[in-house]
Figure 1 (cartoon, rainbow, N blue to C red):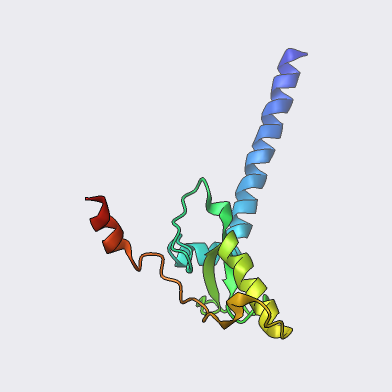
Figure 2 (figure 1 turned 90 degrees about the horizontal axis):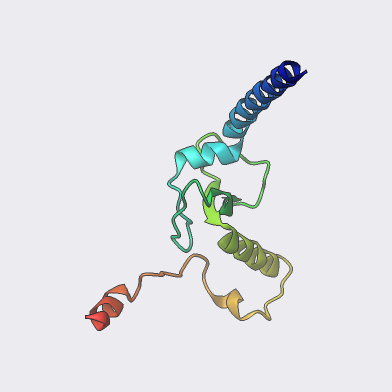
Length: 126
């Protein structure tokens, strides 16, 4: 009975590995997989860097907000962290529905530079 159980477990493990490899190949063919191969793993807004451990927090944003527009050259994609992606969609919705009561609606998109005063910050630490 123990031998049969080990054989069944090995067959189950082999099937899990086979399925995982197939799922990985399918994901790599998706626009997200293509974008992750095409672009560096850095958020296009806040410049946060990503590794394999936190890559799930890096998303693909469709610049024209059309999720069906996925050109092979990636011209409609940009990698954004989940926070910047949510912010981008919030700003898009505010603009789309004319809600100008938000204080961020007058700020140009993508104008934030997180390293603007880096030199002065480093000099103050000396």
